[in-house]
Image (cartoon, rainbow, N blue to C red):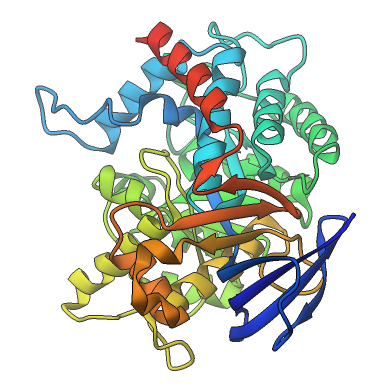
Amino acid sequence: MRSELFFRHALLPGGWARDLSVEIDGGLIVALTPNAAPAGETHAIALPGMPNLHSHTFQRAFAGLTETRGTTADSFWSWREQMYRFALRMSPEDVEAVAALAFVEMLEGGFCAVAEFHYLHHATDGGHFADIAEMSGRIAAASLTAGIDLTLLPVFYAHSGFGGAAPVAGQRRFICGLDDFAALYARCEEITAGLPGGRAGIAPHSLRAVTPAELSALINMAGGAPFHLHIAEQTKEVADCLAWSGARPIEWLLGHAKVAPNWCLIHATHASVAEREGMAKAGAVIGLCPITEANLGDGIFHTQSFTGQIGIGSDSNVLIDTAQELRQLEYSQRLMAQSRNVLATEAARATATALYLRAVAGGAQALGARAGLVVGAPANIVTLDTASLGPAAENPDSALNIAVFATRAPAVESVWVRGKKLVAGGKHIGGDAARVRFNEVIAKLM
């Protein structure tokens, strides 16, 4: 079905276009005409839908519930124990309901596609379901309910530490051997083939969760599909890797694997100068999750000196909002540099515009998808509520700067995924039902 949208200002890969007509057919953008006469549904400012390159949707279930200090100093590792306790109680139905709300909130926050780094595979006792991809299927069903494009990344997780350490009890729902994982991945490919915009890839959880031989096998299994990996997220991980191998995690990876543009290295927080240069040269995307990284106290990736591709993800889903991820990213760099507008560029001097364009490009690469307002890409489009942004929003750079840095609530007005309008007036068309189901699950789990 062919349709047309009209925007007074729209953010294209090369910058802002004025009076843009967007023609859509079969969910794809088939024509872009700047300086056109108004026709079809009209909005003030359009942005390309943002890809979310890293999400664990089940963790949305305990957002805000880990913000009480324990008897010792809290860290990622103490947070992880609380995460395990929730993970061990969730049924397939629970996981689907929680994922559905997370996906709804992503759409309301300006994300139109997501890479789901999914490692909650098995039954609560660690046994396999009759369908090894039962839980993956629940994630796919939730994405279809919400309407978000899904890149499903089943996670290979076999060990609790470097050198092939045996898994611990809290990890029993995650664990796979290579043969089981191959079967799981094949089913995920079948599942995503039935989704609009669906695709599958492979995600070794981290270097501490795989042996070198297993990593090599997974690289071969993936071929050119998206390949995502947590790395150098915490200082303890760096120290443990040094003790095991004599090298830092990214240093070891670059020396032992052919890192390529289909790779997304998640966090890479504690990377040296040489490691950052190596990742850029390899063409990999760095997956930054600024809100989660701040929430867990992990540290800050030195984005201002990184010349390669980056994207953003919602990770633990403690707070889901495109603008707030971008704001946290820029502010973290300002605190490091003791300077302002650190991630603006000569080509895009408005900081929010520069951030947005860079994150869309990197996110699309990480998902193995097309993104942006370009002919042939999915019609994944976000508009801003300019009435809430004030008179300065007549200038599109100013409008996006205000939306990212100076709003008290998301400035998203409408969202289309593959030409279907899913968010209007800032609210998802199925949001109320998703929130009712989510609240029922949380009441049970607590």
